[in-house]
Length: 192
Image 1 (cartoon, rainbow, N blue to C red):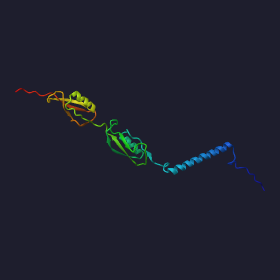
Image 2: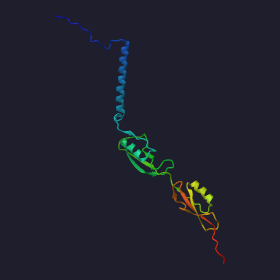
Image 3: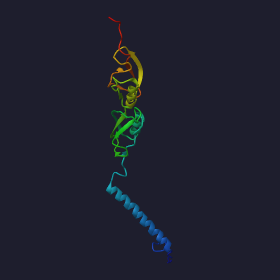
Image 4: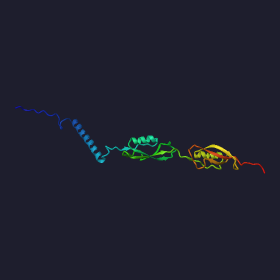
């Protein structure tokens, strides 16, 4: 009968230098941490690792078409909710969105957009009874300018505004011209 010789398998957990044992232990600690973290994350918030939710992008200041494309590209449904006057935003750009940027929502959520209607119209001020230079100062302050000045023979004092076209209180775009009707003085007729 033959005797067998045993040659070790070459791998032993207890064998090796202290540096190898340290590296092995460090690897086991790291593996335990990674597995533990993954299990904890799934247990605390199970949908967080597979969520299809997205943060709503900031579309304020974008033109309507770009804002809608940005939202639709992430699966949101943009809805227009009218216009609002804005002195700082060009007409047709987004001035308000709800929900606000960076809020996380599921796909197919509605996002309401309000667009800029451009600057609010200026109301034609009431300058009847003012002289033309004073009326011009009031118009400048109101955001409109003096247009054509027509003189008619009416009223006792020449150079006084007796009407505006359009009438006082009418809305005009900022910088638009408003025509004045000015008195040229009373008409003097023939004697008795």
